Image (cartoon, rainbow, N blue to C red; front, top):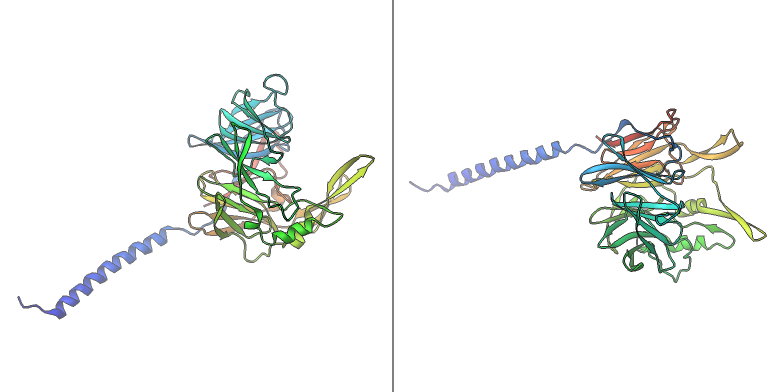
Length: 399
């Protein structure tokens, strides 16, 4: 057969075109299958309460996950008990009532607690002491931190190889020459901090200016709040006045991800930090501390949450506040005029948001208390609940 280069070239081009069309169709199908991120209202989720629990006084609800199952947990201070509910069934799974006296006595002044496993619960007190208890409320071990530092548990706390990853509280480290760290590893066996990591200036813009403002003579100003969450690989952090999420691997910053709403301008440090001021009143050796209450506050983020499956980060944004009169004491207090919930897909870095019905939800400033994230979505305690035998949450999640 005679070789015809024109026919051969046409055949190659035709085959190439067919292959390209097939690849293009596959790409188009993948894009079509990946739906845009969308937040929706998923309705009410309720959990029954016993007669000892007041739905208005529940402390720090959160999700603990074990063997693929989610459990809602919270601490009830009046009866000194930790509650665990099966999330899907919404039924009480376990109630761990702590003793105050005797060999298993744990003081009632609990700051935070962290559930590593059902039989391994770490309890942080306001003092330098920590307790490790099992599911029967028996003390397994106790830690008295050697270093004179205040630490606590948060959304980024983990326990691996006898080491706790905790948040360091630096309320009074105002000296510019002293560069504090925000996180620490505590070796549980030796009661000591083995290393510290993540310095505030590595991700907080205008950090030196903020510290200078806090050092204003005659004023007591609390530090800028830091929000932390973590998965198996990274630590995610931000502040109320940042529209970015900063991703760390130990002490190294990996990247930053935009997580704001373009149409809303977040407060800068000059307008936000005065909200952190406290008034110290002293009288003959005794005194009191009260927070300065600004009735008209600018927009800023109040909370950060991570879904237990580590797919989504949620942020609550207050659009601002206005004064409202309390009819019982005839004093004004700030109420949120509007609020948005923002979600960040950590795999695609896509973001979206939804405006929340603030008149129906318990959302406060500078932070909201009755909120937690499950794999279903973010749960916000409802306002005006009438049934005292349960606690009700409104759920907002990805469609």
